[in-house]
Structure formats: structure tokens, C-alpha cells
Image 1 (cartoon, rainbow, N blue to C red):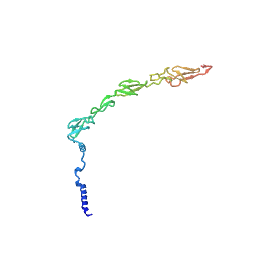
Image 2: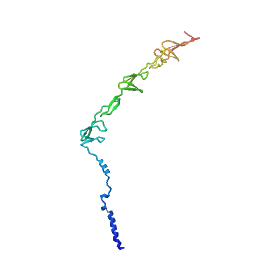
Image 3: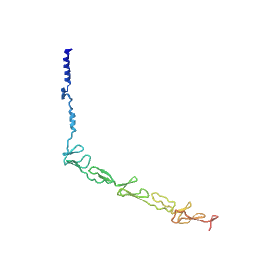
Length: 223
């Protein structure tokens, strides 16, 4: 057994030398991908502070150069402190404006409503119209419709009628009133039966007629 001991020691020393950290060099690590290093360098941007201005699309402007940023139609000037943009007090848009353009720094009204709308229909400025027999309307310059409704007088009869395209009712047969259930003309005495004579109240047509009943003998009126 003695002669084999030195041989075993030599083998163990050789194995230790093979795995020793001192034996591992830089060439034993995988090389860093050149493309990865290039990509990392692309994330480093140039610093333009005090030298110029960069807009939303990445375009660089020189100091004192005038430009329009992508998010605004108002012009800006590149300064050492960054872009300085115009902020004007834009005029108010007309409330009747129907077409607004945003091509400039301030919105601009290109078309103002020049008509009126009433009950689903449109009318020109200063146009007069009658939406119903009792209404007279006009389209005003402020695009509003002003109407006047007719105030009809009380008809002087108990049976007024409405004619087509006429606003107020009319008494086709003149003034009258009720004598019981009978309609009699106003202004005269009317014999409603053999024993009764009636007359409408003067100006008070809505009141029942004044009637005078006399005694009748054999169908004759007593005197």
C-alpha cells in the first residue's frame, strides 16, 4: 500500500489547481453583446439646456428661433430658459357662432347663426310669420323669435263659431241669448210660445232673456 500514496496526492493537487479561482481569466466569461452596448448608449440624450429647444417631435431649435410646438397653435421663442410662448387674451366666441376654426393662436368664428328656429322650423332674420291663426311672430336680429298672441273679444252670442284661418270666434247670426233652451236674437221682443214674450238683456247676452208670461185663455193671450 505504501508505494501508491504519493500518486494519490499528486492527483488531488492537480484537481485543485483545475478549479482554483486564480486559474479563471476574463476570457472565460461570455463576451458582452456589442448590440446591447450600442442600445444602452442610444438612451443617453444630448442636453440642450442653454443651447436650444426641443419640440414634441424631437426637432431642435436654436436660441431666439421662433417655432410652433406641436400641442399649440401659438408661436414660441427659444430662450436659454426654454421656450417662451405667446399667451394672448383671445376674444370670446359669439354664442351664436356655428363654425369655429382653430388654425391660428386664437379660435376664430367663421360663421354666425343668421336665422331663427321656432317649433322645428327655421326663419330668416326679420321674417314675419304666423305659426297659428292667433299668433303673429317675427325673427329678430338676435336670432330670437318674438310673438304676439291675439286677445279676442268676448263674442256677443251664445253660439260663436271658428272659421278656418281665423283667430277669434264670430257670431255668424249676430248677437243673441238664451230664452230657456231657445236662442233668440238680441234687440227685439220674441214670442217664444203662445203665452211668453222674451227679450235679451242689452249688452248682457250671457244672461238668460227677460221673459213676460201672460195668462192664456183658449190659446189667446189675455190683455
